[in-house]
Image (cartoon, helix red, strand yellow):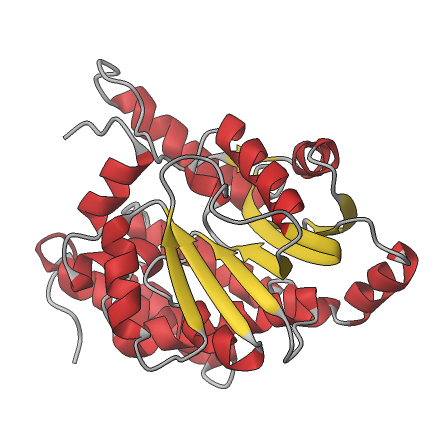
Length: 305
């Protein structure tokens, strides 16, 4: 089915609770969703220095995977998404979170919010699924809705990293081998270089404080009319290890891609990951590989017990 809008695409992806989970996390395992949500929320909290009195906005909240973990650490958490179905699932999953609020987007705008209305804002694994024009419009809007002195965190695929380039080439080969008779997917994966993302942020009126580029994800932290940007940049540098993806995370991600695209048997990747049982990354990736194997048993054979 060819989709003509982001909203149509993501509503289809979220037609059931299970499909919504898979769309945002690649898994229907609640424990994996909880772990990845905790991991991402920790990155955001470190990048933005989230405080108990902050009003925080998440652009592209999906089913609340990150919001559930972050909301307890701020005064109010507001999640927005282009998909009404995602919002519906998020409301159900976060109905016990008293300081959570949801709004549905209709276009690349946050016009339901007045200017200078949030202390912090973030968007994780969202900008990578939209055209560059929309990415820039959302950066402009994030700049508008945060208060002077406020901060934003965003991320997207990093074309300049070897693993990011490899991930992009999967997209290229998929397109090359297809019929090329229809437009590329409306929410297909998009990639940026570090300089490109910083350029967009700067022209959106943001002061770029950090742009971490040592993994397949670009992670940008920026502010609005900061009183002391040097002090903020130093704070971010001091907590850098809590924000960036580790070399092991990057390694596991690349091996996961090899399974997804049929290059390496999941048994081999699971054995490799099991050498790192004590590391947090093991719990993020290994159960996912097992689930992937079970869902593709026609190709890989029945999973090992």
